[in-house]
Amino acid sequence: MALIECRKLTRTYKKGDLEITPLRELDLDIEEGHFLALMGPSGSGKTTLLNLIAGIDRPTSGSLAIDGIEVSRLSRSKLAVWRSDYVGYIFQLYNLVPTLTAYENVELPLLLHTLSRSQRHAKVALALELVGLADRHDHYPRQLSGGQEQRVAIARAIVTDPRIIVADEPTGDLDATAAEQIMELLGRLNREMGRTLIMVTHDPKTAAHAERTLHLEKGQLVESKTRMQTATAVSA
Image (tube, rainbow, N blue to C red; front, side, top):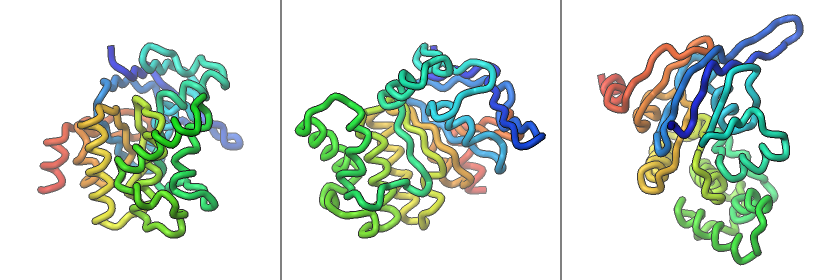
């Protein structure tokens, strides 16, 4: 059984008198430990799918089962607990709290868990070490570069040891060097720690780091490529 199973997954929104369907009857299986990139034009359903998998949004119809749990049927309180255990979210614009240090930003998700201060400290210290920022733990976001801010955001996403990491344009606001460093870090989390990684990107070079790339258009899957096929297309 796949870790993530989508069956006829549909999300519809009302905008005035209009009905918008960014995701339409999508069938998709994602195996545990897989690294998947989602590509497609704006409005194709990429971020909608990401938010459904992360438990931030709920489908209008269809089913979404993760590790055998029908996520869309969880109550709001149970969904919050499930999300804190299963999912780490990496945002394009970092979403760090500017008045908190790197350490305090990374610690935030742990405050939802029943942990002692020493247990939280050990987890935060390990997460910052994994992203190479142990020596920046007392720095505020304004004192960090864009690449360093994204590393803090990654540390915050992994500090609870989630099984799934979702990333929405994680390199979209970075220069080429910082973007490559971030992708190398995400690749390590996938390969060495076995985390399932699902990433939205518009950049073929970024997508080439994934094992598989799915192309969405008008809420439906139109194409799927392996890492080798994507890399070949980028170099051509």
